Length: 389
Image (cartoon, rainbow, N blue to C red):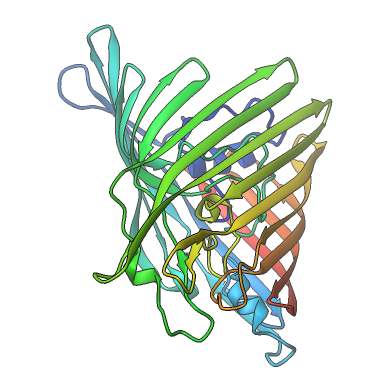
């Protein structure tokens, strides 16, 4: 959202004010200032960080809750749902970090929670729970098939379609050296059901091996870039029928600083890996494959791209504009679910940071989706207030 997405990636390209950078740093798990530093046992230090945030949204034609927009809601709008106003504080966040010197390096842990749930509900949610030592990370953290080099800040919690690779957190074992990282991750598989619901493939998706992800991220002067790939197994087993194939995806992302202006872009291509194509589905990411009439798995192709810019108007005021899309192929005429879906969205916002730990934002968002030829669109005005510690 997730939004915004949104982790140990460098943020060399970010030209926003410090508080806006802090908000994004909290989201991606980058080191951040804390209100409390504590000496625990021995040489171990701990810190606490987080923010309180209120989001308010005025939705036109069923854009969704206060924090984010689901394309599933947009597709069903058809001008049937009138304007609505929503408020929520459930994206507020609390995190804990520890660091302990060990064998010439340090053992670092992070635990992070927020209170986000669908439809503005509030439930404690574990975002991050991982430890790292000498480049080895284990636990739940941002997928290695995710980058924030090309992420333009939005008030919308989910952010720009097609902008982040996978765009969320996964259980994983990762090794990082310099700018290169490789990870074995919990596999993400979504099988599209038949259009007549005669075969609900979702419940029959299984995995017998982890996903493999590779990423290289670096910068050359004012240009930052990230390249990544994913390979994983697609498998189903109903007890009577089963089949296995492979899915693959790759993205390239870049950002260039030109004085107060930062320009960003990303292209993401998939063959049977639309679970890793950010916001390509109705609620989150799209379907990877379907089962044909002969009981064989057939992969669905997908593509996505985003572009954005940030302009630092003054030391305390930044403007951001971004747009993106995803497109999942239809397969054959018997396929339902999120096959044959095109999602698009665009945002224009102002973020004001009067002091280091305050951020106020106002944003216009436009959303459009086409599902098997049926089009829907919606707009919203969002306002956010964030107080960090």
